Amino acid sequence: MITEKDTEHIAQLADIAIYREELAAFTSRFNEILEYFDILDTVEVMEDRNEKECNVLRDDEIVPSLPQERALANVKEQEEGFFKAPRVM
Amino acid sequence: MPGRSIEFHPDDRFFAFLRIIHNPQCGEGKLAGIPVAIKDNISTEGIETTCASRILAGYVPPYDATVVERIRREGAAIVGKTNMDEFGMGTTTENSAFGPTRNPADPSRVPGGSSGGSAAAIAGGLVPMALGTDTGGSIRCPAAFCGIVGLKPTYGRVSRYGLIAYANSLEQIGPMAGTVTDVNRLMGVIAGYDPRDSTSLDMPFRHEPDPDIRGVKIGVPEEFFGEGVDPRVASVVWDGISVLEKKGAEIITCRMPSMACALAAYYVTCTSEASSNLARFDGVRYGPAADSKKTWHESFQERRREGFGEEVRRRIMLGTFALSSGYYGKYYAKAQAARNNVRADFARLFREVDALAGPTMPTVAFRFGEKSDPLSMYLSDILTVPANLAGVPAISVPCGKVENLPVGLQITGCWMEDERVIDIAYAFEQGRSP
Image (cartoon, rainbow over all chains, first blue to last red; front, side, top):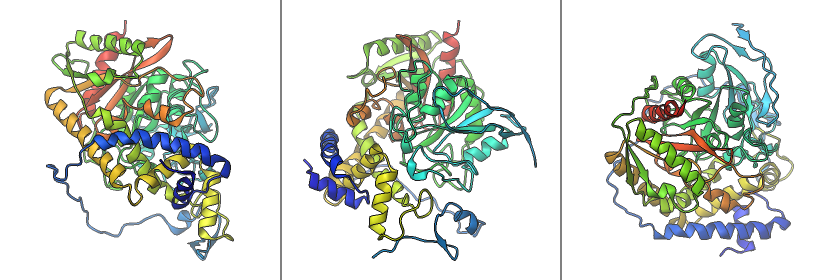
């Protein structure tokens, strides 16, 4: 069972603010869904898989990419060709 | 090069479109002059693309998705962007931030989702074909509910470059149309290798549908008709399966035990991937701007609370929780094991049969508001998510009605055998025509 306090903490981790009045409903629905996920406890995790996985690599060649002005086309605030983000502290 | 253009002034009474282009350009090619609608999570250069979310309001992509580039190159006219559940998160199209689409088969009901706008545009006669995307059934569900055809291709056969990501390991762009022939035609244009998608397969699609299915073995897993499947839907689908038998297919009943955990595995996986993918919506690079006078976290949190709808926030939070320290082993790791079991089940079954058949959806289209509880909405995806977990191709083709509402027959094929599921659907479509 997760509590309303847990829900607030998860929202914080996810960078999603949550309204006070949503908290109770969010928490109870969260718990219903997590309870359903408990069925996964019946699954055994096999460490040793038969199939082999491999990375598909390509040569690192320089090719044209999106021009800077088009990459910035949807930006509301920019400075000297860069995205302007809120201050961190 | 100025091409010709067409006039497009539809009566969009079902609210299939978020944006309509009244005089789109078109050209020469395999789709010359054909109006094609594009789901709003696929990037279209110069045309606003929002994923039906307020957080992307006003976003105009600076480039075309590969599929859009290919459709334009073959002369089609891009006539608009279709409504959807916000970021593809839903089974009804009610989760659009801009209002729900109605089902042309019965406007008091949902069109299914999340590609509900694309399906309604076709079923309502506004366009002959459209693109949808399918993460856990989002092409096949609305195809079934609206009475049209929709294909989720093998993972990797259609480039995802320019698709605004929700759950990368599950989703594919795919064709939707009124007939199997048109689905095949659109698939022929959009499929093929793309170096800009690292999961793209080098496997061109050049195919003419062949209705000869004599000797084809079709498996029917018991679980496809399990708990929650409306008996009236089951009966219509069994009638459909007997049409395939009359066309010469051999019907074999079988089992797929991994279905028991497939839905939970799907929801843990897709929410985990969403929590990472949707972190990019922070109001810095696109969408309504974050307040740069506040601190980083304050401004992002406010922006995201106002910009994302309830279901999107729920899924981001579920995924964040499933991946968080102390819970990873209980949720994400178990979900991946369950996902491997689904893959293994399909691999075993496709050694014995050529394809699987069953209902696309357990019920007919819901009434508006019927699935207001999220878990009950998730449960309705049980029959479509296995194909996404494994990456195999699956098509939904109309196979009859229950109380005048369309029912879809789902044909699932082996990896890379999109052509075969199209052939079986085509044989079915031909077989039931008078």
